Length: 470
Length: 64
Image (cartoon, rainbow over the protein chains, first blue to last red):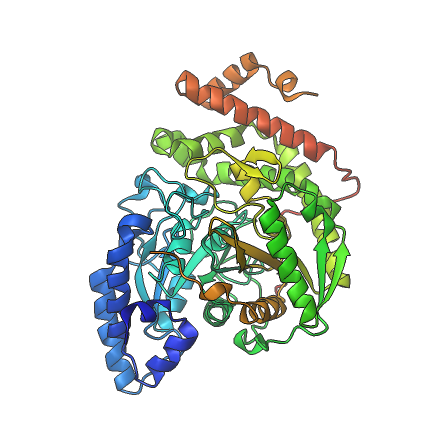
């Protein structure tokens, strides 16, 4: 079998071949290691590559499967974890040289679930230091590079997760999303990224950025793979104080391809904000396609969207500075300078302003829930622009030049504030060949509807079948 | 009130000393710009009518 084809197969396809013993996990891992070898000098997706360890794990998986001990759809499938997921015996840097030699004793809950499912860990993925930035820039381990144009950012903070999945280095990756860090690199790298409902996937064993905004979740090339991953990683975890005790549905069973009768709201405020015209058109075309497939499209109003940046930034900066304060005082000079500046800027937020932002957050949450009483999903762009150049401070969104951080988090932050599930799915390409993402958000714990609509749209288009020129 | 009026440079310099923040001129100039940004954000949040609303400390998931 052609090794590049193996690297671009989804877990949904690969798992059937593994189960029927038409392909061996050893063949899969060897193909991916060769792909990493060929592309990593350009992409820099990995902080730690586990070549030997993954080959050993693949041989064990092959033996187990031959012996009739097939564990399920992730058995023998190569995964990569963002380097803030603790992994027993494997260094976990959080993207900073300060933690270059930190080796956790225990797996985080998500890593343990992947391990139990038979997934094979290929390595730990590069990220914006401490997950505190939306671009995927990192001087400690080198910047991440977009597979569609290496001069452009991957998006962040889960940048290595975006580039690794998009370039066929891993079948499935994980990210963590505090202000958009799963959906931003997913949109900019042309893959699928799901930020699940707050509390649905355990945060235990992940380095925090902002306790009340952090969401771990899957990144992959297809919606089905995101659903397969959710079947493994979702669920209550008593080790995580914010973990929800809810019934976990079968997420892949939701992928019916049918959107008839779904009510999809398009917040008009999303289209009044700075927005690249090509992104606007791609998103409008995507929604029109969903309408032609039987969904009911309505214009809705989400006025507090306009306040979401200020609310989110105040909460995030306060919590991030509180979490990292001891480190800042002890080793501040060693922290990547733009991250250190953001952490130190958080020292200037007053407690009363933080609590005021939390009051406003409650209002935004109420408004979002009221909107979702009348529609099943909210649709819009994931990003107002395609990937900016690495280290560019500003970007042109339509006729307005705006700061990169504000631009990249413009549409993602509201769903961190509310905790609602939100997915980015590829919906087009710019004239320069850069990917564009459609964001769909739903009611708390209604991932099945979010995944169903994203999957139906994906299957009606060919965007997800395109490959970057690497 | 403009952010510059709320946080004059002299006050910023004093606060950075109190917080134990150090750095070269260029670093502190950029930090000053970001600290003023914090005040602008706070102003935007203050304009939201939150009367009668309790702080949403976190999204509280169902626990049973």
